[in-house]
Image (cartoon, rainbow, N blue to C red; front, top):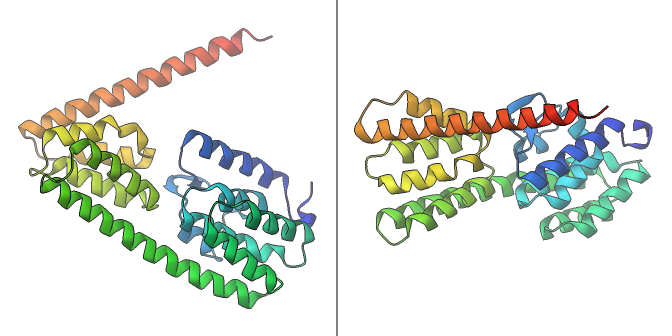
Length: 261
């Protein structure tokens, strides 16, 4: 399939990768930069080259299936200009408007389609999308502050706090360094009970790899103390356990491939 019709083979492969990311819960990263999670700001920046993510299919998949409205809306915003003079891509946009789980995406696609994919309507939606992303981030940041206050005031159970903390940091599309700073601050704080810190570490695998690496480095460089030494030991165990699991998977894969002739 040729890019002459607006869809490329590389785009199809990338769409499969996006689909697998949604299935496994792994974050979608910027092309060739596995340490940077793809954010809505990347998608609405027309000057940023996103390689095969520029193709209509991965954008359509994100606009339709991404669990968070800012990301889905940003993908739809980047997809829309590609539909001008491309009947197939215009059809993909229309399908996105029908199948998306997000009402804002649906309304934005309808507005752009009703205006025949004009640059003016697309620019309007891009501006509104940018504003929506900023507003949503502020709301999630406020929500994080509120649950932390509830925890410290004794109004929220530690398990509920950790669960909501992880959900809010994921839903807020926070950059890896921001998420890492939040978690590290909690782990190193002397006012947060040790039990809460260990609950957070029980969910360590749910954080993206760049965030995990940053947390490990920050704790390792923290001044020695009784509770910090316990955290360091716990993180060493987690890292060792992850390495053992990875080695076991590699060996199983090698045995499987060696048995196929």
